[in-house]
Image (tube, rainbow, N blue to C red; front, top):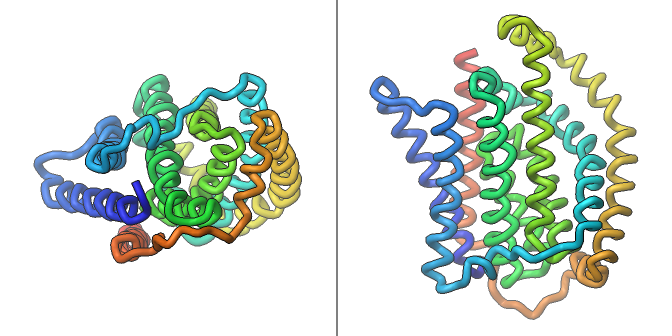
Length: 309
């Protein structure tokens, strides 16, 4: 697909998402989605339209996504890269919590009622795989055909961020989106971003369930969450500054080593060029409409949350 089709695809997913939310509000007395169905619907909302657009475009889905073999030594470095970038994403998440609620924490009560293996599958395997196929596969490769590698990286990261439909996750999802694109270009394979995403989400899920085991009941967990004052968050942010800076710097070195190991150093360097001979515009009316809808939805979500709270 090219950028025009990618933008129409994204607008379609946003409209479907809003439609589902409206239907659930209207018919909430008749039917509600439990957390497992929520996971299934969320994945289907991006994967089904994505593959529909690929099929209509007449492309091979394997070519549209970009799964290629990588070296086992590269896998080890991807794992290291993932953990080195955790402090940065934690810092951004903490900063966003000064202004908006932590979206995952808000759902933690419902998530923790699900058996750990089920939650791990949906959050740390299914969701990363679906999101990588869509955002670093179909979306990024579509933008890459129309603009520079840097433009494709930024716009695919923006879509990945606002596609979460809340400001908290959008903040760190944008940074993660950039890092995942860099991994894809450094390795030439979507498997690199899938591995990163699975580990990142997997650590989050394991941490959530381990935290549950350390408390006697949900009431104690809720009480602890309520003690996260703004002052405590500021201390947490200050404490994460140095680890984030050091970890990100080392991660950059590891990324260069990954590209060298896969013989794609030049390709990684080409990420920063601004010259290209492609004439297609990345920003089109469907993209603008989708972005405006996302921001409006997220603003409304924040306002409604404060009204209810």
